[in-house]
Image 1 (cartoon, rainbow, N blue to C red):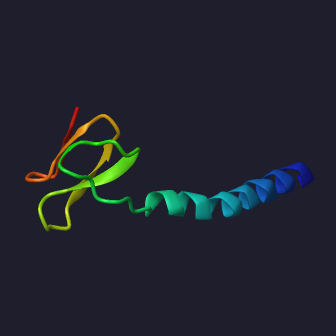
Image 2: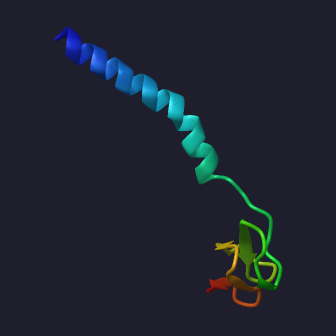
Length: 71
């Protein structure tokens, strides 16, 4: 029973320690992508002035008319 309690405490502690890091990744905002080939590591490809966006990675192409990222 002590072993189970210890494992449960370690699991809870590890979750509490890593939860802020997961939240930072989940809600992280990136700079907007320029039209065309993306040279930044990650950016947000926005459709015009709307709030909709998709993440675009280096080497892909951002279409700012539709807000889509293409390879």
